[in-house]
Image (cartoon, rainbow, N blue to C red; front, top):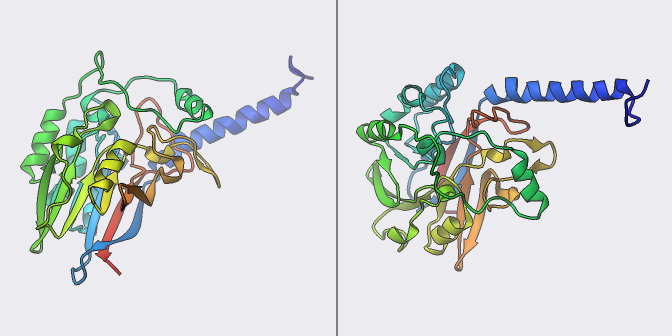
Length: 312
């Protein structure tokens, strides 16, 4: 027996079964298969001891995600020198208490943070094929969304207040510092370029001369931000936002980045060049998803322990 367009019904049923199995794996297993990646980055002055930096990103907490909470809490056992949170902590207006519970043990360590669009605004149901269409048209991603006007506003202020009370340094279009074992670590951050809240002109001018290390921090790795940080001489930039592509093809990689960064650098450590300078860029694939697209494929959720080492 054949289907209307000449495809055997058994084959059609088989394809549907494979698709359903893949979706079940992507939604049921991989989204909760949390990983820790470890990488080294040679950016410290000679003679300075190694620094262990834990980067968490794109938690997208939804009420009831207990396994994610427990996993994030367990990361405190790594005892990092400091934590960098690159935003999108929320995907549920009711999720702030659970974010703070999950990050509570990590807030015992020094830290810095920026926010992403999903910290400010509740997620919307959108057609994910939109991003694939842009890829097919030869574009690597969106050029930034306009600020949300009719979106649900998330209660991000209590989260900010809790981070600040714990001693974490907010980097919303500003600079900040941490002192680690007598060493001055300087940070420069911008607000989320994905919704055009970045104001690099407020923090332009490059690393501070009296700091042992300066790091640029941004949620979404749009090229305008990466170019500015790199041209100003920052040796390391930390970002999130991309979810590592979220739905990837094995042995090929990501199809989209949800920004104008190329897919070859959708996650992990790479380099960026601008204005005659070169910076290391680390993009976290994050550990969550938008509540309306709770799937990952060939791109497990993650946090990263970066070991900063001295220049060779």
